[in-house]
Image 1 (spheres, rainbow, N blue to C red):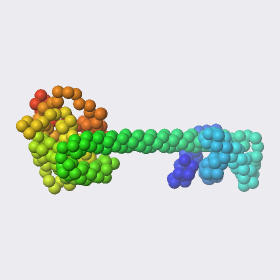
Image 2 (cartoon, helix red, strand yellow):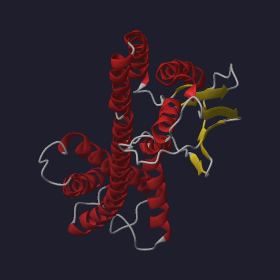
Image 3 (tube, helix red, strand yellow):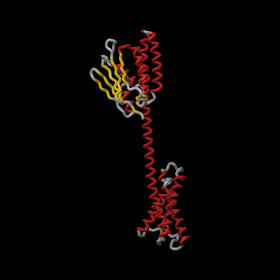
Amino acid sequence: MFQHKYKFLFIAFLAIYSFLNIIVLEGDRLFQAGLPYNYLFWTILALTSAVWISNLLIQKYLLQYWLQIHPLLKQFVASIISVVLISLVSVELTELLLGDPFTLTRQNFLLTFAFTFRVNLFLNTLNAIFFFNRKYKEKELETEKLKSMNLGSQYERLNHQLNPHFLFNNLNALSTLMHNDLKKADLFLQKLSSIYRHISQNINEELVSLEEEISFLYDYISLLEIRFKDSLLVNIKIDEGDSKLYIPPVVLQLLIENVVKHNYFTIEKPVKVQIKQENNKLKISNTVQAKTQDVDSMGIGLQNISERYKFLGESIEINHGQDRFEVIIPLIELQ
């Protein structure tokens, strides 16, 4: 506090207040005899400045020693010693300048010391308030940093769940194709490599543009066409050219993969998926042809998407009907 940029204004205000206080309160004086007002004001201003400057020097040079002692305690004890010295010097000077009855007597010293002690106590109280307020703000900032780091690590963990999940599913599909059609398996591997490169490059991003995500989705759908031919039909209706809309990476791919995982489909009875944009939302819906056996979701999928949107302060909507399953996800608008 003592190094505050407005310290001279504080000193002047405190000196004026103390001067008016002594004038108004009869008996509250610096000496046994009353000083003329002009001498009284300059004496009070000098004493107030001396107390402030002594505390400033203590804070600047003394607090770096004896670190095991609380800084406020060191400040207060050292300031009392300085106040005693300031009071002695003050009475000595008034004796030299004004003579009797402003000599160095026990009574004059105690009156001057009582005044400087009150000023010092007030300043140290303010300094304690400044100190604890600053510490509180530092702790608050530290808490926010830790919270941000924790959220960031959790978000990164959610993102990195996608890599093994995506690779595991498609390596299984590749293994099947290698036994049935080597030409398709080679094409599948090339597309898988390209898609996996895209995922690796964007997986640590919180958001990617909708345009980029749709472009990636078309590549992923072409991968599915190799595996399922016309048994999985995906219809995409997106407003093109809006570059301000963003989405967490690989979300649409996860939703399509969720459809594949939980439904059976054939060429005779395909599953139809529609991705439709409505203002700042995407509706991803599909016909339900649920598999009779339970499918292990590995904790990924919808829960992962929901958690990632929570980090962005958004939420997804899931509508599960008998014949249709729908997920509505918000699009993030960046200015």
